[in-house]
Image (cartoon, rainbow, N blue to C red; front, side, top):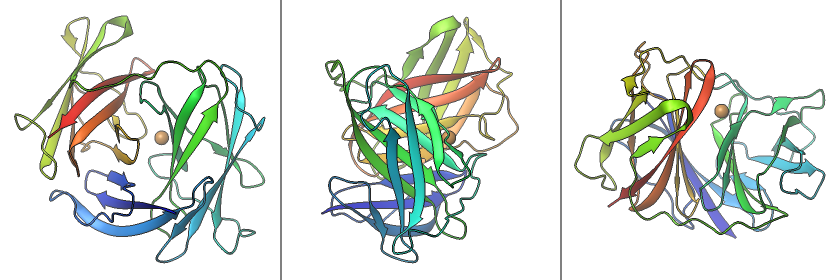
Length: 284
Ligand SMILES: [Cu+2]
């Protein structure tokens, strides 16, 4: 049985989830205030999660159709359950405007999506989506049962279809160029990012060479940042300090627990469109 542990920290609403095998997260950002450390048992081969303290929750996951095919519509169905009381309804709290934040990535972290399942009359959370090609993908469901702590369920899935060659990220890349003239550059306060050091990550957003100063909110904040380790076991989800700014800089405080290669996905809202800028961070 694999151990799936995670930690939730707040201050500028930063959530860090970490899933190191058999390792408990025992320290966190000096900037952040630690509110809870819990360990979750991740049963092999299914999506059951046990919370060692308090009540234990599981996010049951099914799809229609049961087999997911590339480029075809699939309905993802998530149902929060309390272990041992699976018939009980588990109401979820709204966090950053949504009850479930669902992050989807290909296992090589070259493809990313962020969607929000909606509750139906049977208390299932449902969303339709499509996967662009076949292979392994990871879903991260981020949710908070009423009166309980923030939960993260990591759900590995297989998509049938053409298996694209996996991309390997090794070189740091802090500059992103998107469509429509958007560019985002990332800087940090130290020369390099070291594990265990508090970091300030600053993203500067430009369009056609000009700084963007009229960013709108996305999910109640100026931006949304997801950082995932190369092995997909560490997941960090952050919102910036809310300073009533509208750009061009979006600042996040965080800390990397261990050295390695990470992919960062910054989402921002400009001109009524959500843009996703992606980066490669090498933590020493
Ligand atoms: Cu979300």
